[in-house]
Image (cartoon, rainbow, N blue to C red; front, side, top):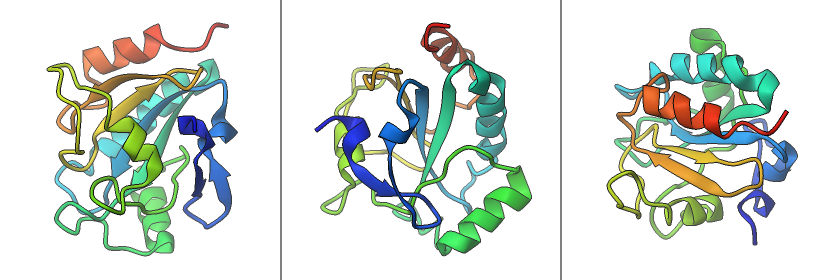
Length: 163
């Protein structure tokens, strides 16, 4: 099954899949509201806004597996993201990204190595995966890579869908 074909629910519970974003370049990120890296939401939203009209979208998957830093309900997560960061990019349901309950999307994503050639488990909140408009996983950026990091922005720009 292709990455975009796995069923997943939107944060509000509506059934969806990444196929709903077919033809777009995606930056898939596991997010959390109570993490030291939570301010990355601002940079993710800025990146989303900067390239949205060129066929790009940030996609957030809340996850509570790292220090219990996403304990909220779907409504609480939505309220937090809207109020504090004016998030407009799609947020999906809270999922597991590691372990036995790992969502199939992350089973696929974690096979992609980072710049050092390391694949495997997600290290922490805000790990990022760049997925091409054809659904191919292109790059993996570890949590400390800021959304405005030159290498991340350059990778997004280089992989925007053809106009």
